[in-house]
Length: 343
Image (tube, rainbow, N blue to C red; front, side, top):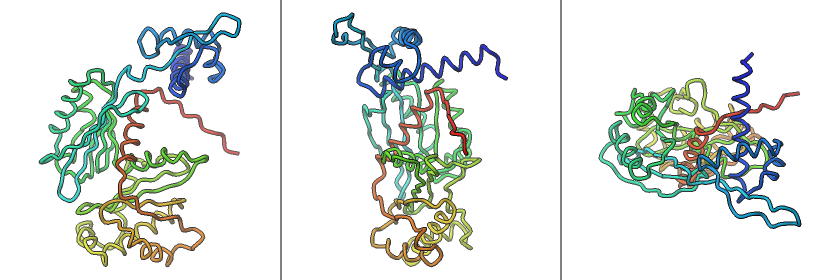
């Protein structure tokens, strides 16, 4: 059992997050309306608001219109209290690029820019982050999307060779003292895509990318939850047993005759394991003209009633950045996961 003092701290953190999340979802609110939405007492909300006002994370606005009594004070969340920095690291078709975005605490993008670079290594990433911190000042967290496997901030299998084996997260944290989140690009893309759909109920969904001159990858949402796996290796579909080496895979996918069979085996495996409602295909090799061949190829092993919708999403930059901003903002919040009891 946790000590009473520890429990009290956790409860306080949870209550603060409830108040902040309520204010983030509204244009403004009063102590009474926040108490009604959160279930907290008016006194508790008042104390939390007082602390947030002192730090500047919450602002007082005009008084509410009076209904005969004393008008209540309105409060709003200060979205520009601090910023987050997001960096999208990409290599495709022999071209390396860095896309950076600075967003406020509501996830609204202040600036976004893509730069083509000669190469990408730790120093390039560190310098980009340092420059942006100097420009925007009050940065509280950094999120980085990587085309590879990331476990505890260390880069494993990766399309960018100079990053393999680099403890990117720990080194950047030691350098800047900020919250550093590093995540696989497909995990971020599928998370952003899923959040942007605003489903009424939890769904199972997948994105598979077939980039030019690089290995395919995938991202999965299972029953509304991002699937990463024990060592964050989930989605590395180029390691499926295709009876050929990964290097041979790269040769096969250069032609439609070689690409389609590999795509069919990849998608068939995903359907059989997670049974998604739909699968989005991305990357330069994913062509709408090949969809019928891929779909019909999957039908050779998957019964028609279990086939998901399969479609091509040629541009996923918005979804990727949405996912990256979301996980970076989440790194700043106190995480409380409520699990519904299964009957």
